[in-house]
Image (cartoon, rainbow, N blue to C red; front, side):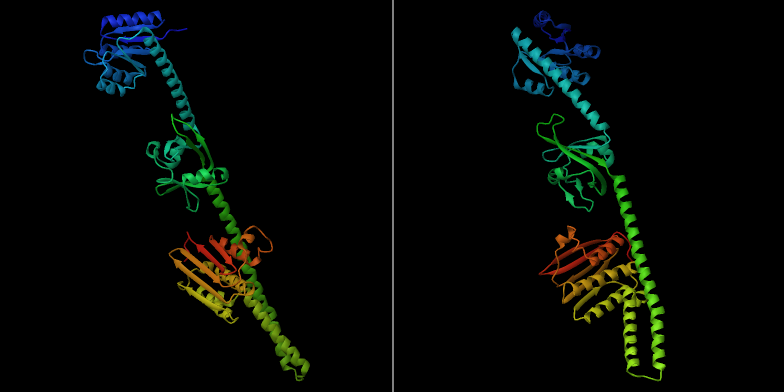
Amino acid sequence: MQSNKVLIVEDEPMVGMYLESVLRKANYEILGLLTSGLEAINFVKLHTPDIILLDVMLEGLYDGIETSIEINKLKNIPVIYLTGLNDSSSINRAKITFPYSFIYKPFAEMELLANMELTLFKHQYELANQASQNLLSTILSEMESGVVVVDVDFRIKYINNFGSKLLNISADVVTDYVLGAKLHLSSLDDNLISGKELKMLNSELDNNLILNMNFGENKYPINNIYITTANFFKAEQDQFLIMFADATLELERLRNTKLREQQKLAAQLEGVENERARISRDLHDGIGQMLNLIKMKMSSLEDKGAINTEITHLLNQTIEETKKISNDLMPSKLREFDLQSCLFQLCETFKGFGVAVDFNSNLKPKELEVHKINIYRIVQEAFNNSLKHAHAKKISLQIYKDNSNVQITIEDDGIGFDTCRMREGNSKLQCHGLVNIKDRVNAMHGEMDLNSDSQFGTSIIIHLKGENYA
């Protein structure tokens, strides 16, 4: 077994010789017996002892404490101080050099050897622990996933290279930030998620969940989020390790998929409206004209008996019904007037059914023309539901536009329905009308809030934002 190498720095010759004798007998290898701090500093530049015995009260340019400071700048070597003094000022000065031990003169042989063994053992343990920490830090730094370590107060203690590059900020800057303050997590619709909430959500997290990591005005999407307790970097308290992946490409893929679905839905709805318009024209220009021709022929007959009168009556009813079907399929006012005028006329029509309708809007002429048909159909469907199913007596329609944001609110005082059961997928409650409304909202890239109650009626609030809806 290789013996440990010792450097003795002691300016009292008798003490130095005694130390050398004791240590050689205990199988230590003495690299040198020096008498000044400067000699010790120069010696360490060329050699690396395993341990240094250092007298605190050295004469010359450097005393023992100053010598230890200079040696620590060069190499990580454990130091045991030797001192004949017991004054607090020297001890306080020595503390800043983190010595492993103090031995007061005169000392016993067993005291010296015990301190040597304990110091060497402690130093080897710290070296091994530091190597482990360095290896861990290297592994975390090289990972192709973000790693953040926070303490029990959710204060960031570590962030790896991947995480700092994702945030485009130095790790030193975010260290000691509290997760939830300057650096915080949120859902994609900007609902803040605190560290405590994230910890509670841990059991519910899945690989498909995408959150935003927010720093300043910037948002960085992340997924594959995993949280576990940890104890890194000499921490005395529990820590939490949060791992995550960069979800930028996945979020872009999902958005493109959603956009394609919305475009497909919009194309389908446009096709439906075009087919409505075609059937409406065919009814008006084809069947309607033929019925009118038959009516004129009947009127020209000389014999206008009871049969002719009855047939003429039936033809009149058929013509009116054809006009009604044609108008329901594609109201002529949708082709000729702006959205606000069309909605005003729709409200007047429903007032004729005995319903009080309140309509308010700040729309200007020709605004929302690109979505005129979809909005008209949504309001028409909602009004029909309020009248036929909810038996409403009052209906309110509010449309307000602020820059590029639009809010459409439709409310009634009807009997309502169970929205919870509808969301759970009950086919009886998934009525065609509401599905049609949802599809049209999605086609406009909008969002819809639906609330219904037997006491307060039904409210539909539609938000259109993020685009130019002029």
